[in-house]
Amino acid sequence: MNRLFYIGISIAAVVILAAVFAPLLATHDVNAQNLALRFASPSAEHWFGTDALGRDVFSRILFGARISLYVGITVVTVSGVFGIFIGAIAGFYGGLADKFLSGYVFNVFLAFPGLLLAIALVAFLGAGLGKLILALCIIGWVGYARVMRGQVLKVREYDFVQAAKALGAGNMRILFTHIMPNAIQPLIVQASLGMAGAVLSEASLSFLGLGIPPPAPSWGTMIEEARQYFSITPHVLFFPGIAIALTVLAFNFIGDGLREYLDPKQRTR
Picture 1 (tube, one colour):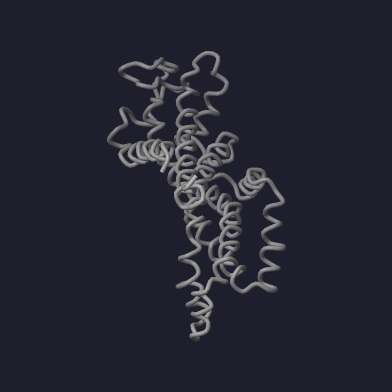
Picture 2: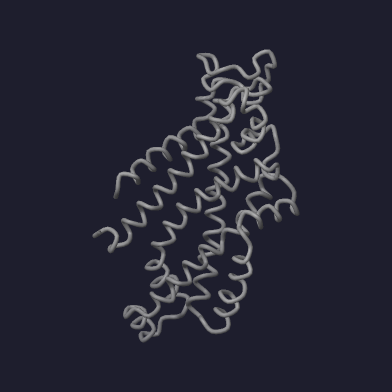
């Protein structure tokens, strides 16, 4: 493992601990307003200052970590499971199933930019946490399916798979017992990078007003609310921006480190 991997693990651990223990670490109620202290600078009372409504920025960032990680984990889990299943079916059976799935369905989803398609879906479905997650799952499963299909096409030609066929093992047993466990490694890297993408997409959609509606302390919503006051009080925008950047960077570092570790060629290099 390289140094960046351990840096990513350290940052991700801090973010996860902050999200888990947010009720204990928060110094103020995330929705408590105090207009007399609006735009207060960072101090011992308010570590990251306050926003336009006098709410504590530090406490809102802690609870925003909960939203970001919840969205990321849910999107990666749902889209990963669905994409892996579809990709495995396409790669294992081939023929018309593979032609329809990889030749038509995959390409239809890949023909649109991911964020643009997510914006269209959320605009159609409406704002809300559940609808946001559904939209990100709809655009996210194709990446897992393509990777899994490629891996299955390779692994199904290995000698131990051919031996299992010769011994009369059924298709489902071969697929789930022999092929998928040996094809899953690149999906671990894909999941790590998918976490970074989901966190960034949630922040982007919330910034555009299509994500989680206020007063939920979403990092993207915090940036959107602070945007017009940036020239007066830059700290209100700076801290949630840093939180997004560090979280996305951490999962990207983890993905790069896992890719290097799981690939013998890169590990040797």
